[in-house]
Amino acid sequence: MKTVSCQIQSLSSLTSHVYKVLLKPSEKVDFIAGQYLNFVMSDEDKRPFSIASSPNSDLIELQIGAFAADSYPMQVIECIKASYESGESVTIEIPAGNAQLRTESERPLLLLAGGTGFSYIKSMFEYLAEQDSQRQITVYWGLREESAAYELEKTIATIGKLAHANFIPVIENVNENAEKPWQGKTGLVHQAAMHDIVSFEAYDIYLAGRFDMVGAIRSDFVEHGAVLEHMYADAFAYI
Image (cartoon, rainbow, N blue to C red):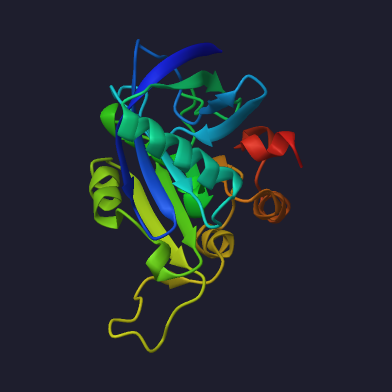
């Protein structure tokens, strides 16, 4: 991994609990879509975050979910905010991870994420759109509630550039009393995928989300025909 200093280009809110960070590295960085970086708080404290941007982008995008005031990710947001206001640089280590996009494969792709795990698959489908990929690509994004969704129109537009791709957001808990009730798929995101696809045997599958979620999905997907050698997730190294 390379240690690189970055300026904070911008810090904004995607939802009440999710922040978008754009970093401008001091030098060209190389990574493969689907890898992550370590945000260096100190020599002994390095925190991993998926890279949400394509490897072709000049800026590095992070999408950080932070819910509690002094939580692990909120401490990073506070560090970023202080650096942004002072103009000081931050330090990252890049690249990391072994669950990157296998660019040599031509198998159909299933990209599935829960919550801010979306950043992991976003890097991939943005890259694939830039490459004008002709692969069959199905993207599922699972969210607890509709208010947790962000940049849906941008995602629809990006995936719409791909010749053979579909984007399916899935909301777990729908508010039936909302003024405009959710019209899309509901329930658990991986069950929606299993309902839509007869067998996963032919697919390269990339997963991101909470470790317990990814572990459960791995078991269910294998029963649905998925081949372990063609399933990828950074969480697999820890579960």
